[in-house]
Amino acid sequence: MDKKISPHEKGILNAKNYAKYVKGLEENGKQFPVNQFGEVNKEAVAAACGFNRQVFNPKSNKKMADRLAADVDRIGIEGEYIPPQAPGESEGALARRAKKSAETVSKLRKDLAIEKEKVTSLEVQIKKLEYELDTLKQSSAEQKNSFDFMVSTGRRFTL
Image (cartoon, rainbow, N blue to C red; front, top):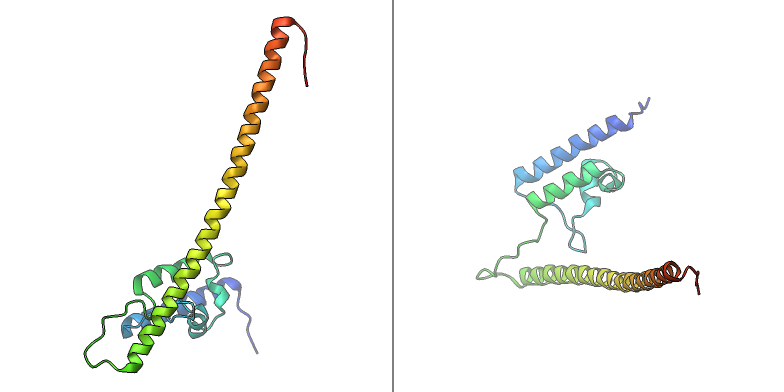
């Protein structure tokens, strides 16, 4: 008979399995696997640990997402460092290095495009806020002039 485990127990089990996986990487001198975008392959890590990749989603499980990020910073991902070509390095190794470099360039271009879009969006927002500020300043000045006129003449004048 299958015994259901509580979400809390499942979280503890996931954390233990993940810790064992990271320990195995460290003992074997390996790094985290990489996906086609040059990022950590969360699906492969999760499968090796026996749970769903959504466990690493910062919205649903910030603690595990933070642990993964910290471990990636500490251990690294496969292919981060490409040493200079050693004498006698094969054409296959050169092709792998070129592919890895192309993936890194692709990831960096994607990140750059995202950041440029953010900057453009912020510039538009700044322009809108500057316009709103100018409008409010002008309205404030008109109200002050109207008030001054009313105080000095005793009459109320509005547009």
